[in-house]
Amino acid sequence: MAITALPPDADADIARVTEALGMITPRWNVRILLALSGPPLRYSELAAKVSWLQNSQLHSKVTALCDAGLLDRTEHTARHVTYGHTKRATALLPILPMIVTWAEEHLEKADHPLPAIEQIEDSLTLLTRRHAAAILWVLKSREEVSGRVLARIVMPTSDWTNIYPPLRQLVADGLVDTEGNGLPYRLSAAGDSLGPVLGALSAWSAGQPLEQAVQHPVWGQLRAKNAPRPWVSSPSRPAPAALPPARTTGAGPAWHSRDLFSHAATSRPTAALPAGGSRR
Image (cartoon, rainbow, N blue to C red):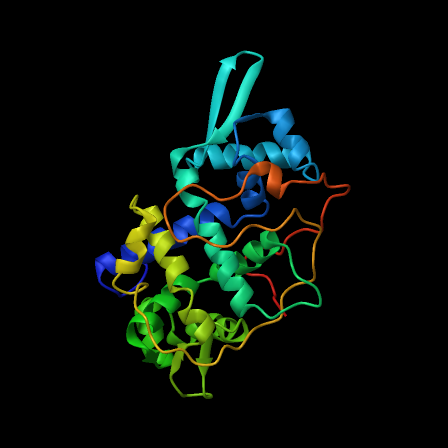
């Protein structure tokens, strides 16, 4: 079923990106995937790496990631079961440093540097706002659009004024700009710079190499950028060590589980903000 009034191929692309974000954004999912970025682990070994999660929480997360096709459960014997990445998960990991690179440039600097894992989680929260992918897609392809026209494209079956809550949130997040009420909306520098990330997610979700992202008809567009307007990041949470610089190729990740989880958590970190929560 179409989710927008865009052509079917564009609508399918937005749906794929939204689905991809939905796989990795839920709380702790990225940390679990990174904990398994090395050799497959037994459940007890994985639990030791994400010790702030209760057993019931970890079990449900692992089950969901297996159902999403990102983790493999291998039963060697009745007493020897391991969990590891599928090929889909391995192909996804290079996108995470791309998100860190975007966050370092466009998220407002905190009093002290945030660990890379927190920057990933904060960035994913922005991207999973309701209708965010569709709004960013339209503004990327059409440059400037009024709220009424944007509503007819993004939510054709709803009252057109329903476009304003998600639009105001994206403006507050620093991804969309406008000169004022009644004037057109356009991507900010930060929103426009998300093209490589969203293009990579589109390529990944379609089963294509990440190098195909630069050929995406919308996310691959390059435009002159306005001055960035960063937003305020959330307070720091206890987290593992930082990731290495981003890479845009489809090669395997440049970090290892032992690098990210180089020290054991002594207490459960403050809960990550759920998608759609307040950022200010």
